[in-house]
Length: 447
Image (tube, rainbow, N blue to C red; front, side, top):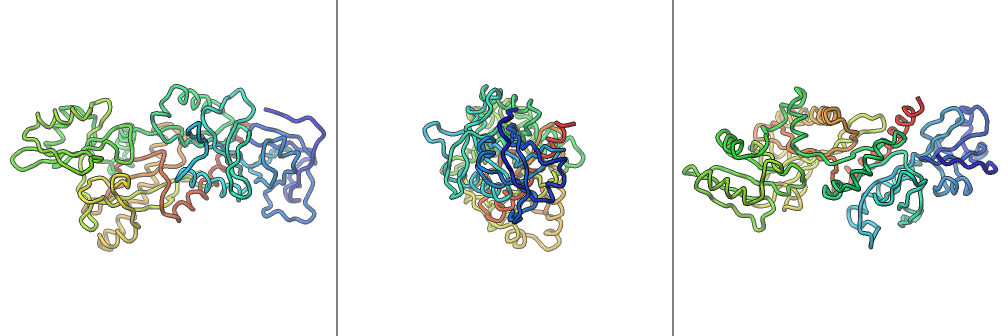
């Protein structure tokens, strides 16, 4: 830790918070930075919240934070922990470090919501993090909402938002995440991508979740043949991909043949094959192997306007560390498509609108009840079974024609929802979780 032993500057707190202190000589903690200061009360009591501390310029500069008012998430004797300081670990182009598009939107939404709650958030590139440095070069927003760069404290909490598996798998990034994880003063969550086989393995082996999981196994010639003997259609899915990339569908045709198609083929087309041997050869030519693919039972999904659809549900931890539903949207497949992802021609729709148009009132009630159970059970089972700190997950959930729900995919790096109300809840819950995670982690470290 870095400690400033110069003449003690002043910080301002509400009198109700000062009464919790032993005396007026305190230490202010922001991330791994510490500054000694003298605390006084605000005679005008103008603080918007009673759990804030106002940092004057000298204290803010010593802590490498912008001047302003910060949330107090923990007081221990005369140590005051503020913020917390949160770093979003990401990646980008060296020539253009500032984010654009949806990435910029979600970062700005998180930073603005955090600032409103007295939490300081910045994003940084993995290459700029070093355990031997006292600060990290990062990017945040000024009071006018413009991007600014600076050197900020090593965070209390780090959120991994590296969105490409190839980057996260690189030796440098893997080593970095390992170092962060080993630092008990930092709470790292959603530390890596999930793969479909490990998700299936954990969920299918637990009696609380196994009924929601389609039959799935490792892909090989024998498993493909066996699945096609049992199911009228099957899906071949890459273990390490999302958003519908690389998904292959196989169906039976009249006369004992087969037809297969790949989700991203444009225009959509089916290849017809007369025998299983021809099918297996065709699939092998698509670079499908046991190491890279799983095979999954096809579900006879319900239709909306004659097109398949599924649910996109996000769950996350709130300010008490409890899993809650952020929101659920519907994604409807494009014409002649068998995946619903928007990059593959799908479109968004509202949950209530689609469900009420497709299902009877009795089935609607059952669907909502199943969705609640899934959102309560799946995150907890995965977090425990994989031994990971998870705080945000999205799930692709299919509904068959009988109203039964099936968990088709779970993603630990969910994309931003287009629905404004879901995004707003997401940022609010996320900032509340930052505060909770920092407080709980600090208490563990101090024990």
